[in-house]
Image 1 (tube, protein in one colour):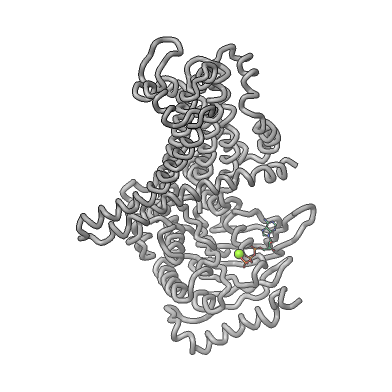
Image 2 (cartoon, rainbow over the protein chains, first blue to last red; image 1 turned 90 degrees about the vertical axis):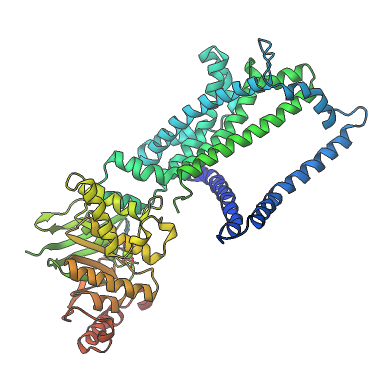
Amino acid sequence: MSMTATKAALPPLRRTAEATTRRGSGHAGTLPRMAQPAAAPKRTPIGPKLASLAGSLATRILPPLVVIALLLLLWQLLCSRPGAGLPPPTKVLTDTWDLIVDPFFDNGGIDKGLFWHISASLQRVAIGFSLAAVVGVALGTLVGQSTWAMRGLDPLFQVLRTVPPLAWLPLSLAAFRDGQPSAIFVIFITSIWPIIINTAVGIRNIPQDYRNVSAVLRLNGFEFFYKIMVPSAAPYIFTGLRIGIGLSWLAIVAAEMLIGGVGIGFFIWDAWNSSKMSEIILALIYVGLIGFLLDRVVALAGNLVTRGTSAH
Amino acid sequence: MAYLDISKVGISFARAGIRTEVLREVDLQVERGEYVSIIGHSGCGKSTLLNIVAGLLRATAGGILLDGKEVNAPGPDRAVVFQNHSLLPWLTVRENVGLAVDKVFRGRKSRAERRDWIEENLRLVNMMHAAEKRPAEISGGMKQRVGIARALAMEPKVLLLDEPFGALDALTRAHLQDQVMEIHARLGNTILMITHDVDEAVLLSDRIVMMTNGPSATIGHILPIPLPRPRNRLELVEDAASVHARAAVLEFLYARHAAPALAA
Ligand SMILES: Nc1ncnc2c1ncn2[C@@H]1O[C@H](COP(=O)(O)OP(=O)(O)OP(=O)(O)O)[C@@H](O)[C@H]1O
Ligand SMILES: [Mg+2]
């Protein structure tokens, strides 16, 4: 029963997994391919080389710049009318100029620069996500390797992973009686499921051939773990970590709105309470950019660890 | 007693409550240094038999002795070259062979000796030039050669080859067959090889084991190939004994035991 449950529940995640890896490798693949014609002939003069580099940069950076400029223009036109609900970009810029140029001020309490808010949020994510990564990979390995652990734990995982992150907050506040550990717990519990599930899929997908090789060589459990299991499942594990870090960042902003204190989530809530729309918009831009950076960092770590070679 | 003694081996699998007997009463004795091929239609149980000898599957009847000792678990004394090379893609060619050498000879050879041994085996299959490449960067024939080097590097008592050249084009296949023949002549390994290819079986083997169709497949006939070594593939084309052996195998496979799907 639980077998079918897992199978039914896994494909969507796996598809995400494949989609992200494919997207990732696509990125990794385009750069060298574009760079190659310039790099291959040894005695090319520096001029054409630079030109082709500039060309490839232009083709990658120009389209998003054009789109952003058009959107800003549209936004400016729509929100410049009197009675518009949101400030136009020019007003956002003038309103928040002080916050942009001085992210490091600290007037005590929660009256701090954006740098401090963001770094407080990042710290919570770092702690919660690291815990989730360690525990998630361990549990995923157990579930992927042992049929009994899978039968026992899988139904539990399948139910718990559908609980929305914020639904955990009251419980964890009651248990920890403090905002800080509660927020970290919410990060942990939000990001652990994709890590567990992807790790388990990765472990279960270790080709029988690799198991046969290790059997013929008589690798012991420990050697099998770090010479076969981890490298073979690494692409899956990193897919889980990548989904996990994205969810963490989604959850932390929401959790901080509720627990208060220093953090980008509370900064947004505070700005809403004092009707500072421009500050909210600025904060959203930062949240988006940092979420994007976190994703790239985990993807990069994955590429380094798997050295660009996935299992197949 | 024979070096490798497979006696009355049978195996059945239970799936969804139904037992199917795949092999029944398989009896085969292989002498030290002998090259034996197993040929039979797809699905008759050749890989299953090889996996039992490797210790990767447990026979449900009968038993196997290698050099007087019972086989009941996998081990490096029965190195396998798998049908699809099964190199670890995250390791280089050298590291793939190194994984086996370091595990098997740890404590018996020094680090420097192991390094030399890895290179010696890579040189044996002419793969030193690609030692630092990963499996994805080399051709199918090269991968199979590395698989053979990895198996030889374990210094197995018997080398088990499961259709080692099955996925290769005809030219690469001929080249690798010559290499394996040369290695066999030089080192005198005991080899059990599965193949689909009648010419390959005649060229390489001392004996050809022909299996009947499953379920409950067994050995139908064992044909000795009394051709002198070293053998040359061009001379064998015309050689009367070789032509006769090929005809005998073909007759067994296509007249007496036609493929089940075709006979039906
Ligand atoms: N673990 C297993 N459980 C159930 N049936 C199995 C198992 N392994 C093999 N079989 C069955 O045993 C039969 C023989 O399989 P095997 O792989 O040994 O054939 P083969 O002769 O090697 O075929 P091929 O030439 O195509 O490689 C097949 O019908 C297969 O379905
Ligand atoms: Mg087979």
